Length: 203
Ligand code: S3P
Image (tube, rainbow, N blue to C red):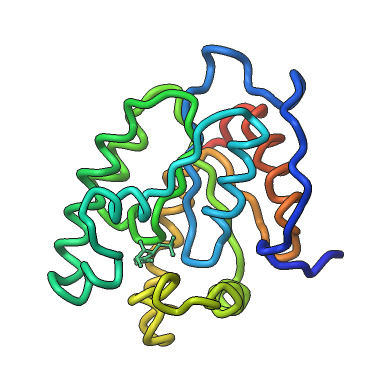
């Protein structure tokens, strides 16, 4: 089995009629999962394959606020970041033909979970992996620590506790779970495309 991480460069495959969801049945694919699960890298490639727009919730918050996520955490604390995150999420869910990568903590907020569950034509997909794999992937992304710093990864014991607390939320809001620990980026995107063509798994 491949042990490649999700950072591997890959050749984009064009969308074909067999990879596209049926018109009118799905307007949004939302990727959820812990830090390092590949929401951003897989999401961008998935959007490219579908010919949809890709939106990363953290980058959108940064664009609107004019500060980086670590700056918002440092200057106004996590509760303020969560407030901005909820406002930004709500304002994006009206858009169609988007792949949206959530931040790892977004499903902690009940309001965000309810909003995602109640937004029609929206498939939430959980990219899961074991904790050690997630930490290793985050470390391998940190070529520019200022740009990729994750305040909630600074204390690994706390991060692992958050991981355990969040897991049921990810599972609860997702229609599909993709176990990505042993998947390459390409395999992950293929698995998401296959999953969204299946009926929702029972909760
Ligand atoms: C966070 C995850 C980050 C970002 C912020 C907080 C978290 O997003 O929203 O640093 O609490 O898990 P990614 O999951 O995209 O790294």
